[in-house]
Image 1: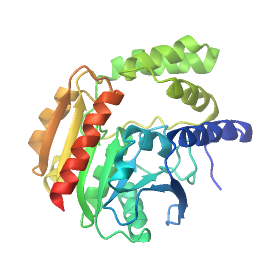
Image 2: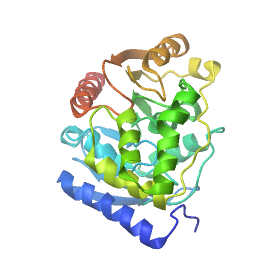
Image 3: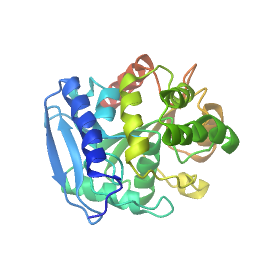
Length: 290
């Protein structure tokens, strides 16, 4: 079986942090192992099974517990399915899908079918936004609405800024293992400092073969064909996917864009207070649709 973990010891260290974060959340849950044609996918299910379902998709180099922590009250009103994206440092199979075709969309639809969900909302952060938009492009018939936070796949930022402020500190940490370079990385991307992110990414950068493939952007013609209601939360100071630039293009290409929000003073990763606002919007909107 393909794996992007560099060593077994490194894998266990990362998965220990995964389990530690999940335990810290103190949310009743169960693991679901869902078979797809792309490999086994780990899903954390929480909340009452009779509540309206929602799928959470974490960002790049992330895991399902991080997505659950982002919206910690959602399980009280919804049946939440937080998925471990394939080929990321988590508990799903190591099958790296292409961002250039419909593989991510097909994979998610297989998950939805195998979870026996007839209609479901989706919420995703960063790379999770790409996964969700790929799903809408492939088959949106079972999706009731999507909520995207600082999503990939709509616009990209200045590559030179990303090189000097993100990529180079990451590479320097990998070479020297000096914590100051992780701190520089986090300071550029996180609105608030996150101690778990520091510990988790310190392991991931050293022990996981990350994907540095350039992120594409959605074709305007494909975006125009999407009918599912889309809500976007863009971050004002996001150097990866700039907020104002994102909303400008989103308003032009998505006819189903029902709500757009520019999170003032937010970097790529939102603060807990900002995520609480997003969570409240999700809950309110979803119940208005019922």
